[in-house]
Length: 286
Image (cartoon, rainbow, N blue to C red):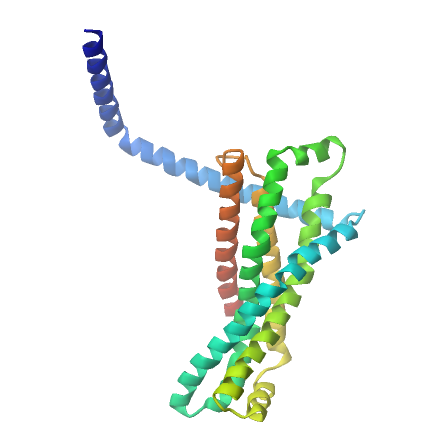
């Protein structure tokens, strides 16, 4: 009998919960949407304050140049392999596709400037930023997240040490140094990859390849790529450091799952913002 009563109670409870869910469906939707919107506003405000603090502590002594050099090595030197690989194959793919398109119009002589302008103005800054995000940005988020959940950041506060000066600002300064250099390397390697396909494989004259490139590409094109790399450096470092530094805040949870979620969010959001700002900057410079 007790078992029958228990089953009846469970069924009755399910029925009541189902009716309550149907009765409060719209209010539940509004509550969920409102909560998500407020969380978004809270994150935006916190990110703004975070960036303002980074900008302030970047110009206030003491300067931790040793930490900056370490991060330059981590962000830049250890990313060279992936930059060389992606740059070479990006240039080779561009050469194949542009040759196929330009040959229809009898304009294969423009292969060199087409590759150079595509790399210098667009693909170089974007691809370099995406590669560094995947290789180093995710590592930054995970490292800061582990420091947060293991209370290492709290220990810095207890010892009267500013965590911004030790773990955030060096990453920003290093990124501002590294991103333009990696972008330039990507451009040069990509142009050389296009040369291998266009000149050595498809038979275009090397003089035509480089001569037309010099005629159609100016210093303003190079500076556009440089400005984009600076903006992308700020975006990637900002998002990745913020996500790791604030693991456990809001609804992100805590522990290993929170670090994993923060790392995924950092890579996805950084990549999307890089593409969005590439369009915005491209429309501004055109």
